[in-house]
Image 1 (cartoon, rainbow, N blue to C red):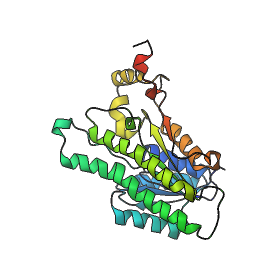
Image 2: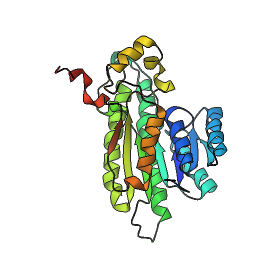
Image 3: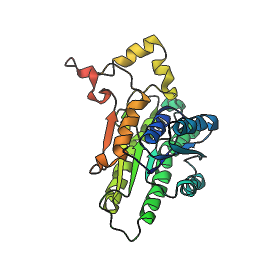
Image 4: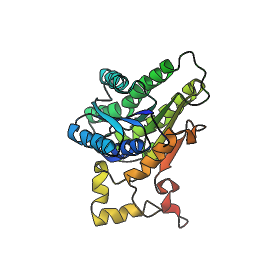
Length: 265
């Protein structure tokens, strides 16, 4: 087991990619904290699934955009499992609108969860990682942070400017803290999924016509599954990637390859 007895917090873990990561981490031996904000029943289902497979898990409610909630999330984790080893900052929302019609509330809501939430959770995780090894000289990572981004940290997205801006911010946030935290033996990386079959983007894959159009953007010619991202997260959280920090892993079926240029433009 690649994550045996490590303690992992996965934010936004009640459904979609977060759920798949929580389940995969449980299968790899991690003690899993399933964070949720509103979907308590779904979070408890994830906990049940992990426990039924022989793992350990708890569900903790917290809004990652609120500092007090984040502090409490980590406190409850330590009470339950004694420490924190891994953070997967997965929480993310969309609130779409044309730029000219977008309200300040729409902008702030998305930035708060998608970017400020990354700051609050990563900062708290790093504080715990450092405190846990005070006086020791580790030769491997004392903690791992995985930021969930998107291909839209690089690909512009008209009609979704708040979301794309938040993910672009995640990219440079991840690289900056990776640079700062590497001497402390804290690894920080990101995963940028492409089109993944989750509830947040159901409109783009639920109809045959939309799915056909989507395939034109994916050279690999299939929509991704949450488990595809979960496998990448397991690798980044494990010692198999111990010499990797400050990197973004694109799990996108080739979407970042600009497929519209495949026939010479």
